[in-house]
Amino acid sequence: QVHLVESGGGLVQPGGSLRLSCVVSGRIFAINTMGWYRQAPGKERELVASRTNTGYTNYGDSVKGRFAISIDNSKNTVYLQMNNLKPEDTAVYYCRYTDSGPDIYWGQGTQVTVSS
Image (tube, rainbow, N blue to C red; front, side):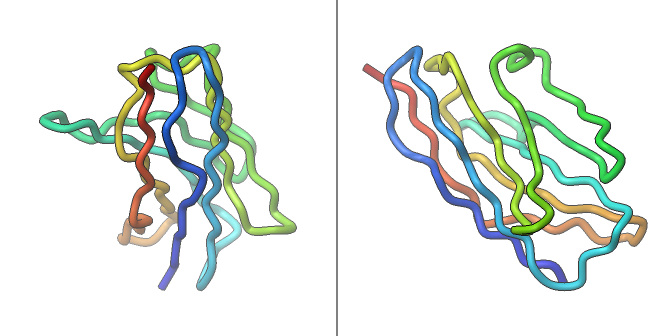
């Protein structure tokens, strides 16, 4: 089992910044992929950013150049730095863990609201 706990969401004005955190615990394998996804009301869950254990990163087109994913292995924590936030970034943000096994693990989500 792998457990993911997100934090850092909240209300921010357009143009502002937030940093989300995801603490990972449990049976973590060295070869894995960590990711951030989001889901807005009435929309499907979509990829925001992902990072493999080798450092390869992938970003959704709408966040490229504004968001950055990073990992602090000493703290078992994945971060999502979000800059220049826009109202369309409003969503519940979820942390995700996968490895070579068949299971996908999700956190409980954290709400991000961008509004003036």
